[in-house]
Length: 454
Image (cartoon, rainbow, N blue to C red):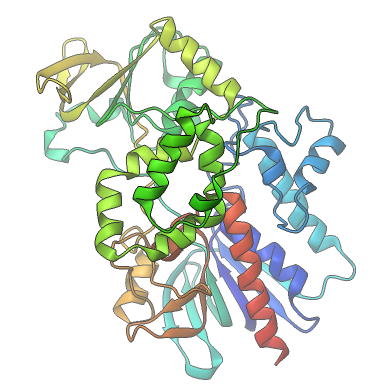
C-alpha cells in the first residue's frame, strides 16, 4: 500500500510527530509508523520504572502540545501523581503519558487518518520519483510513502578507549549499555563500581544502583570531572535577561552580560532559561568555524549548565559524594586490564598529568549518547550513498533547511522528506529536549498536512 506519510523511528520524536500528524492530517490520509521498539515513543529515557529517575525539565513544560502547556500537569493530577507545574515528575510517568496521548488519538471517533504500526526496521531506501520513497524492511516487506519523517535517534556512545587496550577476560566486567538494566541484578551489594562519564546517564545509574541495594564504593571518571548542575528549587524565579542582552547576537557579549547580572545576585539558572527562545537563532548566526570552536571548548560547560537535574536528584547525589560513596575523578582513560582484584583501570589525571589506577568489579559506560550522525545508522549510510541525504558539516546529524526538510546530495530539499529531533542538531542545535522537539514535530506535521490538501 502507498501511505501518505511514513514515520521512521520509535522514540519521542517519532511519537510526537505521529500525534501531531493524527491531529492535523485530512480525513483521506494514511500514516505508517515503522519501528522495532515495543515501547514505542518512550525510547530509553521514558521506559525506566525507577521512581528516582526524574525528568530534567519541570512538568509544566513537558506537554506534547505546545498550545496546551498544562496538558501533562493535568494528566498527573488525574492519575493522582504528586507533581506540580514546577515539579519534576518521574520519567516512567512521562512515558505513560505519551502512550495515553497516542491512544487517545487512536480512539477518537473523529480521527481523520488511517494508522498502521509496522513492527520492523527499515534497512534500505530507494527513490521512486513522484510516488515518493520505498523502504525495504527487515521482515521482507516493502513500504511506500509519499512523505517520510525520519525520527532516528541516537545510540549509546562507546567507551573512550581502543579495544586493543582492554585486557583479555575483562570484557565480562564491562557494561557497555547501562540502559539494559538486567546488569543491575548481577552486582553484589558491596562490589566496587567504576563509571565512565559524569553526565546525566551517570547520575541515573548511580541512583538505580542504590535503589537496587548496592552499597559499595563508586568511582566516576571523566575527562573534566564536570557534574550536571541542579535546577533552582520550585517556585524560585530569577530576573530575566537584560533587554539589551535578549537582542544580542554576540556570544561574548552574552557571557559578559551573564557575569554582570550574576554579580548583582541574579540566579544564573534563570538566565540560562532566558536563552531558550534565542538559542537556535544564536547557533544559526555562528559561522562553521565558530560552531566547531564551541564544540571543542564550550560544549562540556554548556551541557552541565543547560541540561540540569531535579533538585531532589541533586540532593541525593550530593549526599552520596559527601559520605564518600561516590568519588569523582577528572582524567583520561588509558587502559583496562585484568588484575588479581578484579579489573585495573589506569588513567592520566587531568590536573597533574600523573598516571594513576584503581580496581573495580564492574565498569559501566555512561559516556552518554553518541551524536546523531549518519555513522550510527546503516539506513542513513545507504541513503547517503544514494544522494538522498547529506550529513551536516560538523557531523551533528543531517543537513536540513529551516523547515526541517532534508537536503540531498545536490544541497536542495528532497520533496516530502523531513527529519525531526536530534538528527537536525546541525541546523537547530537546541533540538534534543521535549519543549523544542514538540514544536518542530507540530510544524512538520502541519507542512505535510498542507501539502496533502493541495
